[in-house]
Image (cartoon, rainbow, N blue to C red):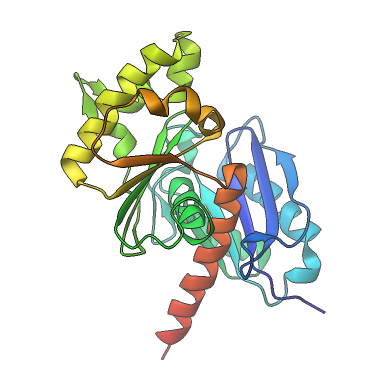
Length: 259
């Protein structure tokens, strides 16, 4: 008997993770499954792994929405960018590809948008009804924007230009690692990035996610911003939880507008 929990699947550069989500609690309903991302991560190869994740949780599949995150812009089910994944994703009709493969309705969303939705519903930004910006500091910089709880999708503000270069190339946590920057040196770059962000958007709250957010006490206090800036709390669960939320919400919207 299906429990009806939606399934969230988060596609990352190193691993593809999935779990059914209890949306009443904002927690995984079962233990997460992680499978390594294929070394040649074409859409077809990734879809094969996603199918394995879905099959693993087959008992909640029959009547459950499935949400999948992709590290790229996703417009109307089509991948438009591939900054940190295989270039063959560009132009891929990923929702159709997955629905044909799984014989199941699937909602595919940008990974930062999903993480932001997770934090808005169950994490650091829960209950906040102002203008909220989530940033994920990782290989690149992902962003998600919410106004009064409504997502503005595919914002891609990690690519703001700072001193003539793409911000994420100098301010992502990968730049800190690559250049062996101290937290003070890195914070100086983050200061430029977040100041530009707040000058453009005037947010009420900035939430900082990504793996490095667990060390937020090392760099957030070094920033001098007018906007409150806080670490994300769901850590690597945010994408899976957000994907499940979005899959459920989008399905409901689709249902309402079906003639």
